Amino acid sequence: MKKHLLLLSIIFLLLYKGMAQNAANSAIKRKGLFGLGLNISSNGVGAQIAYSILKNNDLIARIEGRYFYSEIKDREITFQQTPMLVNGYIKRGSIGLMLDYHPFGNSFKLTTGFAILLNEVNNVAKLKDSSVQGGIKISPDEVGSIIIDYSIKPSPYFGIGFGKSVPKKRVGFSFDIGFYYTGMPNVNYETTKLLEPTQNYLKYVNYGPFVDDWHKDYSKNTLNNDFPIVPVFTCGLNIRLGKLEH
View 1 (cartoon, rainbow, N blue to C red):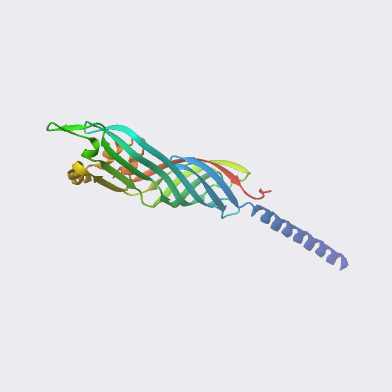
View 2 (cartoon, rainbow, N blue to C red):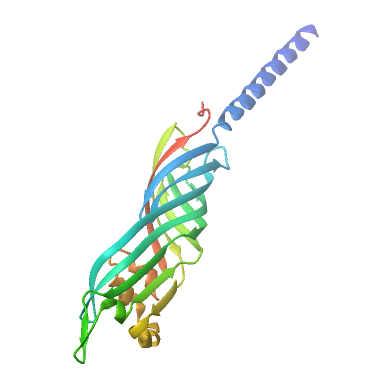
């Protein structure tokens, strides 16, 4: 009887030790749930903070922000065979909440989320040189200006990629390709002085190619009725915070 009690005691002791060890391992694995990231994308440069919802890091939520600003100063263009100078700016960026799902447990991921897009364009165009009308010389300031600006609505995001925002090791890399479904942007035309009568005409211009003439380096997909999207390519450096998995 004593031998049986001793054997049972040893078995319970081993079981307790095993359960305690598993709990300790789980606690260790649940540490280091957070990650920080720096990224460079076609929609700006930014950072993110990520949280691992599942202990195997197969489901990760992250908050990200990006920003890019470029000033346009005296850029010469030709509009309807007329030399003009454009001044303004191009702004890109986003503040969003994303969810990464790793269906196979490896670095491959599917991403969805929602973002407030900071993308905005503002351009003011004036004649480059004075114009002669009926023998009268008119300066560019007297002719007036054409003002074009647009912004994009908050948009859902869909994408695929490789790399975990909370990497298994201390440092990891990631690559993502996806798009924001923006719908049509908010576009505004305004003309001043002698050009003011043309304002109604400009409102009905096919503004996709029209605006593209002003800043060819900006994605014309944002101004296309058939593809109202903003494609995004992102490369990132991710750092895991806290203790690593044992």
